[in-house]
Length: 419
Ligand SMILES: *Cc1c(COP(=O)(O)O)cnc(C)c1O
Image (cartoon, rainbow, N blue to C red; front, side):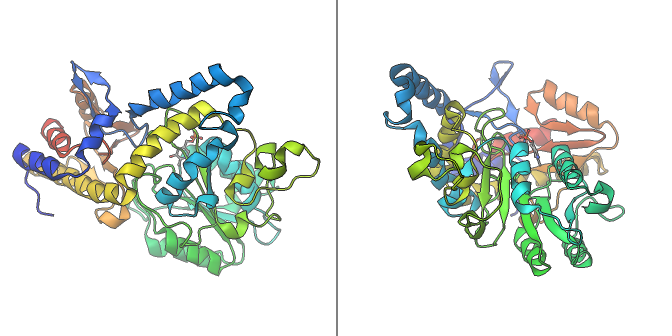
């Protein structure tokens, strides 16, 4: 795409944008009486205006029906998780029965490890990104120690090559082959939270399966950002949170995907709770766990209805917009952001802002991360003072994510002028 660094050009892209009206469905924090320019949807998505109505509806149901709300009302709580399965399935490319919203992300990571990290004396290693989000590192470390292994031996951390910031596909695949006989699991992010790199999930999964290992992904920065085909790629499992690109409330309900070949197998090991019990007989309260087929068989507890209501409101917007349409706009928005940053560097006469996110569109989502070795923190504080919200990661990285549901090309243009 050939961009121009002018307001008129940015406004013309906004006029042609078929998704432009979605912006009005969100509430923006204010700065000097105006909407902030919010490029932090990779950390916490904005609040859809409809969340209030959906949550109030459930509060009213609770008031009006008490315990009978589980069965009466037009959204019976007994089945409330089912109201999100179709939407989530479209977002991650799965069958509705392969996904369910439950718990929170780090909790789900542990629960999925129970099913998919079953090390033996010979096959016990886990491959992950060396720069994974801390919670994922702690989860993996504590899991291997729980099984009596040493993290430094059992966890293979993939690091970018000297002087590089992202992982090369050939290095990921080579590590899988190198540890073929001892590898139990490949467990990586879909999009790395720091660099914004989108990994080749299908090829990683294929390589892991070729050596007899399971493969799963943490989709915290991927879900709602990049369309996926988890089922067709034969990914074994995945989990995500809903408060980043999915805009479903701070600390909101997370979700899981389990391929049906595992999900429909009652022998797949898991930690069980009553809400994962076969639905038709759940209330007979019998001893001896019989799982509900599909991802629902991993639920432990009954549904947190207020969180799920916020999730439902946000997912309605995804249904309406369509994840593929969002991706089309996202590619254009992020490419424009890359352009305005490059223009800024040109005008300064040196590369003050070094983009470390892959420059190839198919290797990234919405987010651009840049290193600013000198005056990075100052630059960031200056943006905040002028109503632009991104985030700062010590020691030197600025991250900005223009989100296709609510950001505009004009905002990206203004960002380029202010930075
Ligand atoms: C945001 C994020 C988390 C956060 O975990 P919670 O359990 O939701 O607090 C974990 N892992 C990754 C990769 C993340 O991006």
